[in-house]
Image 1: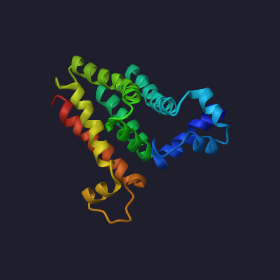
Image 2 (image 1 turned 90 degrees about the horizontal axis):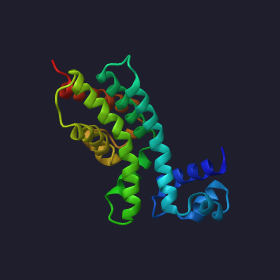
Image 3 (image 1 turned 90 degrees about the vertical axis):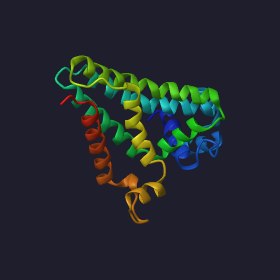
Image 4 (image 1 turned 30 degrees about the vertical axis):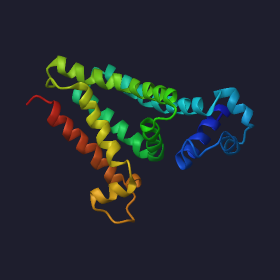
Length: 204
């Protein structure tokens, strides 16, 4: 792993544990075992470091979604299923980072960084929007509000996993239940979203 990737990995760990405000550049440098000046050299600031981290994580899903859209062997609903599975897997893999993202997006501080992060995340939904619109144009899907359909997928996952305590109470689980480490819950969320999209989109 090169120095740049080492810094990003350290940032991911510390931001997830302590949040953006609670993590200093010096702490990131110590975790990555680099000189603080190297962080400035590669990224310029802590804000730009965060943006780069979001960019790196978003790029993975963007690549997956773009490949799925171009696959002629899949039906439109099958493409959406793959998108849902990929998105759910990514959220369950790094719930702390997911919390951090949404916390930053909801705060009034650092509007420039917030706008940059939102733009990076929204790029992924261009492919998802195309999946749905292509399905409508082909006659496989009903005519629906595409943007709110995407918001329904993202919002379901975000609300359920916004708080470990809230998730346990909603699902009526005991205090030993860790939703983020539950394979059954991950599968349940994925299957629910697919069922929701089948009902919402498919012409019977």
